[in-house]
Image (tube, rainbow, N blue to C red; front, side):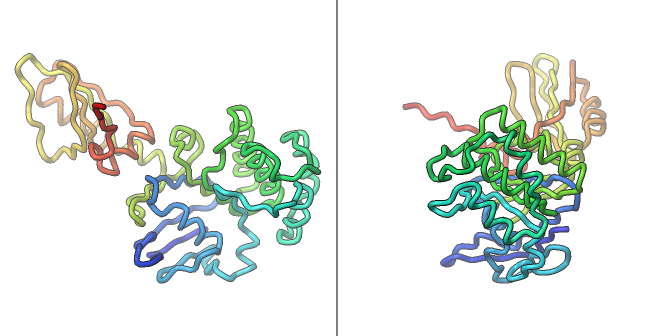
Length: 299
């Protein structure tokens, strides 16, 4: 299990992490989302042992990961800006990875030649961004890590290769119990693969839940009222956002669909329907709703 408890990290007076706390259960996919500057990459650098927290704990299997080679050997990561030696080829980096990861799987390395179809002998620096990302997946997944940590993992990959790498990762989760923590702005893609989600903002983790619980406890309510009648809904309904087009009113409400509908029906709407929210919509409204709405600017 990966745990971060009250982690604080300050750079030149700026708190990149401000008491961040997350728990990543074993054997699943944890999606870490948040706006730019929320602290996602900083927390990933703590989880991979690059940074030590100023205070708080960053633990892998109950032990601090910083300067802990035994726990670091369980972790493989693909950062947004993947590192490779300037003149290295994929085969050179394979030898480098083998020196650090005792479980490096050469059989898998050979099989992945057909999956990624990259030249082992060409310098990585001459490859496109998408090809470099493929090389990163090729090498990293051959390490057979217990914990796989990814920062914008499929950025630069074409749709076919995106599906391919997600398929490979999900197979490792189901077959070998690999734990994946992934930070991405592609919330639609995360929605298809995540078991748990944590939402970060300003160095804090605002909430973390299973994706199913998150989606079951916030709903989009659409209602049509009688002409001239638009009731003020009670405060006991935790309404995060209200909008309307014509006579169709849309409310984003915290609560279960059944409970929200039951309460609203007492106001006798002509029509009322509760719809599930996408992860992207939940992200927007949990972070403040209207202040994150797209602003219209007249030029």
